[in-house]
Image 1 (cartoon, one colour):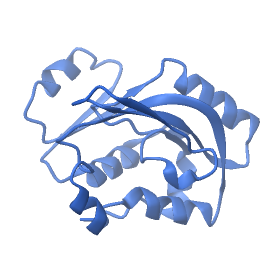
Image 2 (cartoon, rainbow, N blue to C red; image 1 turned 90 degrees about the horizontal axis):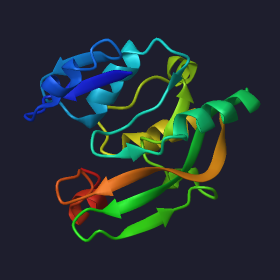
Image 3 (tube, rainbow, N blue to C red; image 1 turned 135 degrees about the horizontal axis):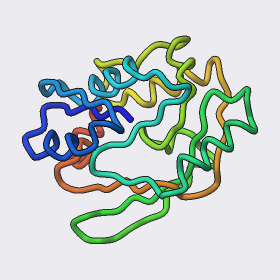
Length: 172
């Protein structure tokens, strides 16, 4: 487990210290989500990479199910799944199915073979929606496999990067 602290101002460092033996903790000045992703990927030593943002959650079975699926599909470069999107202000939750369109996924919730990044490179740090650029580059070389289950929760609230409609529309 690699934890990249992108300049947090809360108690992240103190919390992570309790788990120092189970994870690698990288603390850096705030430069942004995509740069933090790339830092973690560059330091990854395992065969697989999956991203989890600090305010979201994986179902307890997610990693095992994704690992089992990629073992059954060795030519796949990545595994992806459905998810829940929860609005933390209203408490409303909706189900997001990615089965028919991999572009309904998020940067998190996709288990990549680490070797994929060696072939296609890292996330483009100049892009607001770098995950879609990454998917386009990956899909030119690899196939993905879908798990038709909702295995993580994306928590949406006013402070998230995609909370402002005009920011999303302009991709900035």
